[in-house]
Amino acid sequence: MSTDGGAARRDQGADGWPDTAGDTALTIKVPEADPLVRAGFPAHVTVLYPFLHESRLDARVERDLSGLFAAHAAFELTFTEFGRYPGVLYLDPWPHDPVVALTKDLTGRWPEAVPYRGIFGDGLAPHLTVANSEGPATQDAVYDALEAELAPALPLTCSVAAVHLITWDGARWRDRTAYPLGGPAPRGRHHAYG
Image (cartoon, rainbow, N blue to C red; front, side, top):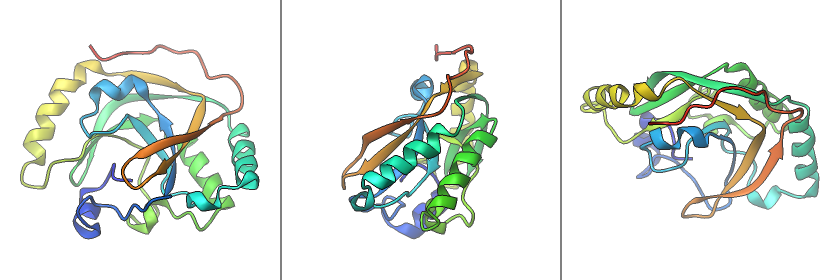
């Protein structure tokens, strides 16, 4: 899922990732952050990329996913700070624990679903990619300016009530299914850019 990791981009090919048609991922949509994202895809926090190939998504897998997500309470994520990976500017979602717990349960049930194909060892901490187009020579100046431009929009808080399964069709990521989390999402303040 070409949303993270400039270092991997240099090693994995033109777009940075070995995505193939039928790849899937599980993500948290964060539409409140869409106005801040400059990376060319909707704002999201990845729970697990890649998941199983689309050809493996049968009724049993769908039932297992529904049950797994229903066992987790809805939660809120708050974005107050920026962070950087090589080539990537991101927003740091807090707390990390609910996202990490989802990933842990998914990889416990499907150990063949290795986060980020093992490119980053055990994976990356939860994050929301804002921009990922700069190389080492330009990223500091460009991302410093972008942080200054976007900082007035923070903090931003979103309620998380579902995890979305998306599928790569060979050209773009498409929504497939939304799995509700158990219990109502907490009520909180929502901030929009502007």
